Length: 267
Image (cartoon, rainbow, N blue to C red; front, side):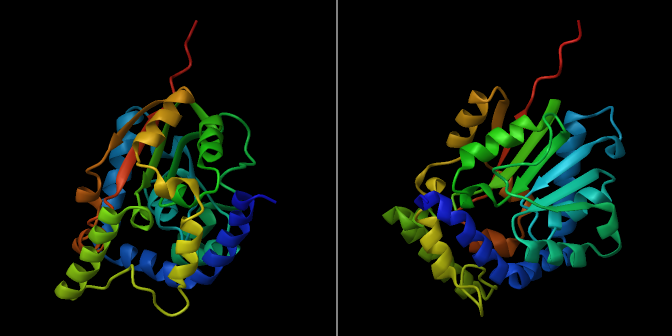
């Protein structure tokens, strides 16, 4: 078994341990202004691509749902939502967080790199803070493109989270984030709490391929190679992050990759 193949099982073990703590982050998002900011963002992106479609007519796949934040928002918008995650413990947290909406969302345990769906199954494929963690992100993108319907929309939100492990300037910027967060007295999500074992995640991050690659350029080139029209919004963090997140992660700003599959040509 190769190094990257072992990462999948290590990820599953790590995120099983983090499920409860990570769920608290999503619960905070659901209880604050972040719920509206992200809902507005997702609605705007979907409506822009499908101006003449009702949300209920759109099949949406969320890959790596974690504790369910995006799945919940998409369901509230009226979309037909399928949400997958590698970790059963995360799916259990997601169902609890969804409350009465849980029965309206299709929850499935699944590997983001090997989807059990037919070709052209979804109008929208969406993910957040997942790609960086994958052992084979190129396979994942190929799968996401495969299940996307003609005319479909792919949205991926991510960042160069662990660049500081490979670059001295990035390391210095990361340390400034820690100092600024402490000075402002905000909760620093990069400081490990009980059971979080960030050293384990850093060890995994050193071995996954994207930690030492400048993004989103890599994403755009790969998606274009898959036949999608891809572009990036590197200022999306300004619109969807809280002030605390902007302090915590100033050195690793969130970007959005938007990829479009060409509509079917009518003959």
